Image (cartoon, rainbow, N blue to C red; front, side, top):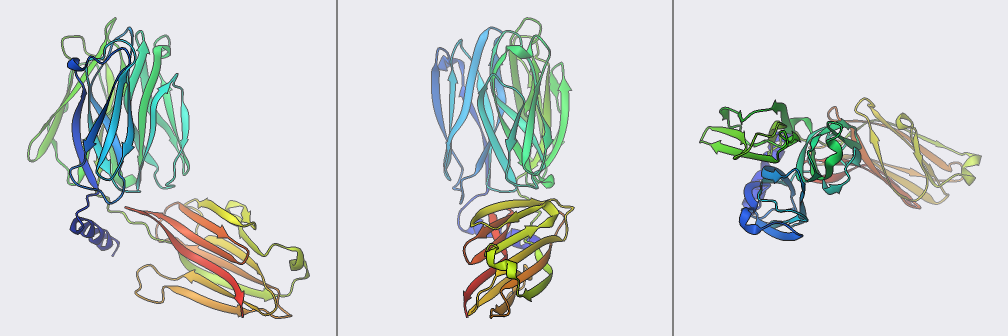
Length: 418
């Protein structure tokens, strides 16, 4: 059923004339540009068709130079719309002769691209990310600046439900000469990536690789060092037939720059679907509690993550995939002449009666109604929820990342007039 829903969504997008992925290549800088002494250019790159939502854009360098004197090129995506994106490239100092790149655009919230453009005086750094199940990924360096011979290696050193750390390392005496590096972090769910790391010290030929349906072959160079007393010059050349793709990593006219690249098959048509969690059980308690007079109108306790909320506002919380069923305990203050309506999610695909509905009346002998609910996730995954509390209502939504991000209501409790 979930796969059918995915196919229907894709067919609907096609019927409306929208695309969900695109790719291409661009020669950003060539010798005729005289990219030096603060030269800057902005490239507007159109998509082949229009996206319904603004996509995320991935850059993979395919040809670039970095002289061992004081040289630098900067590259950043300055804007993205549903029809095009813009890339700015600049050369602050001595001339840079080549900057070529491939680009890949994707409209899918199971993938997240984090940009760290033109990072001066780079160090290891930790970033926040929003999808708790995006626990796989890679780095794509997209700009460099140095003063002397450099040796650098970028890699993801850890990914948690909320953060990703990018480590920067290199040979002592050379890593210090790296003055700027820009990069993108590309994260996704497990299905998205198949990654192999390949280290080369001589010209590299991949041999023929069978094309894979609905996947891109990406080859970011993630570690590089100068050849002895010479400049970095690297060029990735691709050859594609109807059934295969191959690539060479070369230099031109000068010694080869030892490097490490990742060979990545990245899915751009993702099958795995996530759905909201469903009510497993709920126990409802009604009582008169003298202490309730001074307690907050609404209280939410989530014992598995040791969190509680009672003030008006919007909050987020994340449950580990091992924390199942998910427990949520809600206490509602009840006033004479009022009633409390409650809703709990029942199913995902049923055509009607998708929720359990309850009503409880308040009177002089009942001033507090408590709900002890347990929800079961529909698959093993980390679960993010959004909590909204007002004077008389609490709403809890399960934040679900698929091709689009949705907030699916799983609990709502409301105090109203009887």
